[in-house]
Image (cartoon, one colour):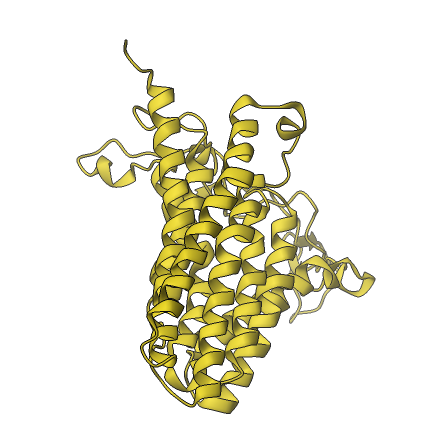
Length: 347
């Protein structure tokens, strides 16, 4: 009996998402168990207690939450099918995996801070394991509707081209001619028009030379392969770019002076709040406001505080990005609605 391609794809996605759920918890808990083992003067009982706790937790959440949720999604029950503005899988993943991992990392920092010791800073685990697994789950949720073989027909990225396109030009009357037959010798003579500049606001229907076009652009020459694009590969790029700011914020906790301080708590709290954006569907208009409220504004304040306290543990570039994104969102979304900014003669 041959298995259909849709079934193989479904099994592949579910196995990858389940691995992204359990692997970070097991690895983080094992490192935390090793830390407790060192702190408790080589106490093996404490080590295996933490390991057993991780196994019990993963087993419980898998059987009680993860598997039932996946069953409802696969069977497309009515209340699941009606959810189109947010992603239940992303919400459950954040609660069951990302939140416990961040909590364990905070606990590890607190234990070492109280003991005045530096056994393990968990340097790469928060970024290379926890957030990478989060990105994998996000990519799978984004790419799930499309086919893995053949031409993409579900994402619609081909119709989202925004490159410059030459458009038509509209004539705007800016010069008027008048005849002044009674002018003197220094004035214009009869039959020669006098050009005078007339200032007028830009018409509402004016078309710029370059504007965005929804039509896909292509090139059929010898270098035509450079114009090829596929929405499925762009999903990976968009997802990694979506999480880049959060990755940099979490990376700061790998610095020894930051990890063994009280600053690790607000950093992980803000990082987790920024991950809540994953719950919103990618095309939802609410995502822009969520990015400002859950990421850019809090991250800017935190980065400024970290630079003042510890120096340049985080690049200034990210702080500039946060403040510029926040200011432009506020200006174009709210301030341009004010009467003073609605005048067409200003800009």
